[in-house]
Length: 247
Image (cartoon, rainbow, N blue to C red; front, side):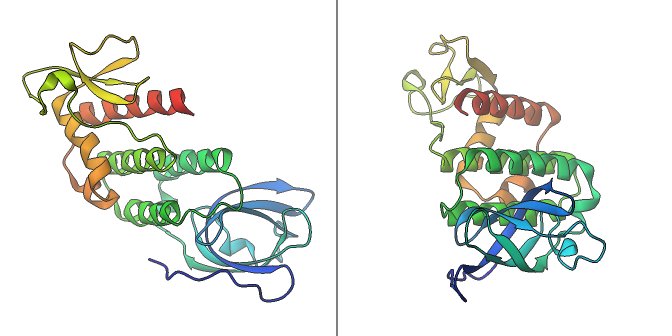
């Protein structure tokens, strides 16, 4: 884990950040606008002038998914990246298209749903943890569970944590002989008796256990738990529906 570094002003308008690169778009003939999630200020965007020129020294340090130390000069607008040093580049991750696809879905969501300049150290640490875990994973279901764990932690961090406990008719416990459902609209697990909404999706008892693990354990612990294709697919469907309903 990166050591926490307090944001410091080195000269007028110059700031230093520990940052995860979460995307970029081309701008002008040779520039690029980069998006970072930083330890100090949450989402930050800044231009890299001339970075698409062959002679640019910044390009190799700013790949999506890299952890970098960056300096941004600001006067007006987005600011300009003046220096970037790669701290960690996750080379194994970048060779796997599935890992990149799942991570880019997360990064795109963060770029769209978060405002610039709002510090969120918990989320920064979660992103770094996810990158560390995904770098080492070599099995698809473990990867999918790690990503699911992150998504639920992210939604909880944004104020949409579901109620993962027995409903009032379940007498305080889950019974493996009974059917349960996830109520998308109300964000909670309910029994068959309580499942009156069209937004209720079947949730088997093993999937209930995973839902609880997502909120009580780290991403790395969740990824180590054995899972079936059926369980992972069902959990992905519930996540997607909950995400669409709330965001």
